[in-house]
Length: 226
Ligand SMILES: [Zn+2]
Image (cartoon, rainbow, N blue to C red; front, side, top):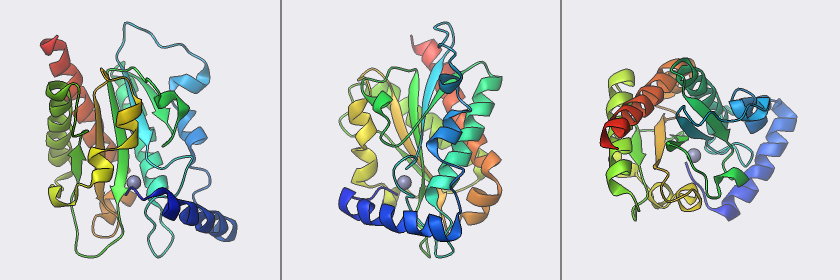
C-alpha cells in the first residue's frame, strides 16, 4: 500500500514506537535483504548475465500497511524479496535489492525492475494486481512484464486478480519516474494482508516463486523480442 508522505511520517513515528515496544520486524530491514544480493558482497555485476532490480516495498522508509496485531507489509515484502533473489540466482540472474527510496533508483539500468508490495489489512478484499506506469516510454516491454507477472503469479498462487484496487500510487509509482526510461518496470501488490494472510505470511516461498516465474517469463520473451 502506498501512502502519502505526511501520513507516512506519522506512521514512521508510530512504527518506531511500536518497534521499541514489541521489537518485531527489526531484523528485516533493507540492509538485511540487501546482504543477500550481489551488491553488498562487493561483487561487480557480470554484464553477460541478466540483472533484475527488486524493490522490497517500504524498506528503509516505513512499515507500509499494518495489521492490528502488528504484522507489517514491510516485513512480508522483505521476506519475499529475499526469496526471489535466491530463486533467480539459481537461474544465473543477478539481482539488486533496493530500498523504497533507494538512491540507486536514479537512472537505474537493468533488464527489469519489480517493486514488491502487499495490500492493506482490510476485510472483504482478496487478490493481487500488477501495474506499470501509465505514460510508459516502452509500453510494449512493460505490458509484457505486467502480463508475465500476472500470469505466473496467478498460476503459482491461485489468487484472483483484484484490478479494481489499482491506485495512482501504482500507475504513477515514484520509482518508475526515477529509473532509466529503457528499464522495464512493474509493481505487484501480492495480496491483501487480512484475507490473503495465510499465503503472504505462511507461504512466502509461493509468493516469491510466482514473482520469479513472472520475471523469467519476461526475460525469455525479451530475448526473442530483441
Ligand atoms: Zn506498499
